[in-house]
Structure formats: structure tokens, C-alpha cells
Image (cartoon, rainbow, N blue to C red; front, side):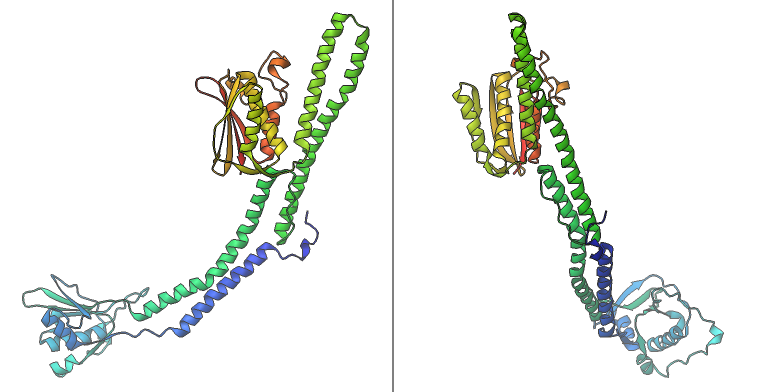
Length: 444
């Protein structure tokens, strides 16, 4: 279902597509600017005289050439340029061409070219050694000379990071900085709807009656928000319908119970007293069920609450009645909660510990953005097979069905319902050495 007014919203994929086009356009514009602004790198010039001097000295005083001795040099493929430079180098060194080698690097992604010797006229040697020293070598090269002892001396330019390369690197950095805001906007546009839905899901878990999501943004987001709101309303309707049925059944049971009590007035005393006791139990069960429905169905009113002060109130009330209940000292823990519901939950857990174990040890502390309340006792505990069932409505771990020893079976479900309505949880676990610990975790 598409929400009203969504037809006027531009689709999310179109917005992202346009933003990506803008990013690409900015990058291409920066590349075009680089193409226009960068200076064409020029090849370095060397002379045969500079090479001969480096060979003779074993080093280049200018620091531009690297000189080293090697045992052997492989012959390079012939080409006209190599032959001309070899003739000039041999003339300058006063040796034959079989004692010199010259090769040039092959450009990247280009195969080395081979030539037919007969297809190119043989170059002329320089007229003199002085003229040979003036011959220029452009760009990179590897020149080698075989010494009289058979070893080779190899000379080649020292490759450095030229200024134009630094300029290109700086420009790439500037391009990345220029595109970063568009990339951030794209990532933010992707993440914002996800964060909104995550927050809505968290809010729904804490408060099913939370206000619905606003129908804003692109068409897909508005449509998803409408679906989420519909789901939330259906969930609330489903819970309300079940609660209404339960409340109606519990309420309507009062009338036949009252009629049954009136009809028992003419019965014998023993039968009447036994039946009246059963009727009182049933009426108490109906009242408890109605209270449970009322607590779990009414929208809670929340405000800042000091959980430690509330726990102290519950503990002090029971201690004044002579019960063995203690609260460990600690710092105040403030959270946004419904005071009546939280007090009923704490009272329920502490009262259960007093009822079944004769006492309770209560502690409260903040742990990882949660308020953790623990109620410990040294009673008989709960069988392991019942730990997963004690939170089911009307389940009683005490099998005698005696309300004086086992209760109705709505206390723990009511406590968990209150905790979950606040986005928290209640868990039970048996203690080592006997007893039970009830742990409540509520988000702060």
C-alpha cells in the first residue's frame, strides 16, 4: 500500500543515482583540470661525456647516474638508436663496439620492437672522441663497458620521484577531499532510514503504544514507514482483543458465582461452607485475573524514577512487618518508567522470595546502560524443567493447587510483562548451594 502523497516524492533509487552521477561528474571534472594544469613531464638529457666520465671514475659526481660492476651483460635487441649511441660511446672510450652495450627501457604495455638490420642504413661514427662526448642520450638507458679484465661496468640513471609526480599525488588527494562530502551525503542517505527503523523497532519493544513513524522522505521510505505503522497497530489490536476477551470472561464469571452462592444458602452447613470456600477462591482468581489484565493493558504514564528509592520503600515496608529483607547499599539509579508498574514488579519478586524462602537479599546496580535489580533467596528453588514455564499465566510450580502455598500463577507473568513493557527482561536462575535469584534488567 502506497501512502497518500507519496506519488509526489522522488524515489530513493533516483536520488541515490543522481548523487552518484554528481560524484562521478566531480571526479571527471577534477581529472580534466589535472589534464589541463599538469605540465608534460620532460625526459632528462645526458651526454656521452657524462657517461664516459662516470665509467672512468667509478661514480658520477653529479649524483644522477648509478655505476656498478657486473660479471656479465646480456646483448640487447638491435635498433637504430642503440647502434648510433653505441658507436658514439665506443668512440669516446676509444674501444670497439663489441665492448660496449646500450639498451633503452621498453614503455609500459608496449612490446619491444625488433628491426631488420638490412632495412636501416648503418650510422656514421662521430668524427672524434670530443664530438662523441657531445652526443646526447634522452631519457632512461643502461650503458655497459667491458673492461680489459673481462668485467663489465654498467651505468644507468638514478630514478627519483620527479616533481610532476608529487603534483599528481597532491591533486589526487585534493580530488578525494572534494568528493568526500558527496560520499558522506550518500552514506548518510543510506543509513538514515535504517537508523530510523531501528529506533522505531526499539521504541516499539519498550512501549507498544509509542507514536507511529512519520511518513516522510522518499517514496520507498514513506511506504515502509506506513507498513511499519500498520504492523504496530495490528499488534496492538491483537493484544487488545485477547485482553478484552480475557477481561470479559473473568468479569462475567462473577455473576454465576454470585448466583451459586445464593443457591447454597439452603444447602447443609458442611456442604455450604466447603462450597463457599471454593467460591471465594474462584472470586479471588477472577479478581487477580482482572488486575493482571488491567496492569498489562493500560498505557503506562512514565516519568523519571529513582529505582533505588522505590526498592528501599518496598524493602522497608516488608522489614517493618518483621520480614528478613535487606537492600545492598549503592548509588541512585534513575530511569524513565511507570512508577506504579515498577513498584508492583519489585513488590511481587521480593514478596515471592519472602513467601517461599522466608527472606530476600536485594541488590541494584547500573551495568552497561541497564539497571540490574537482583532478588536472591535461600529457598528450595525451582526445578530446572519449570524455569521456562513459571512465566506462563496461571502456571504454578507448587502442584497442590493450594492458593495459600502456591498462589494463582500470575505474579511472575505480570512482573515480566511490566519489565518487557519498559524494554527490559526478568530471568530466574537457581543459585549454587540452594535458592533462587530473580534478575531484572531495565534500560536506563
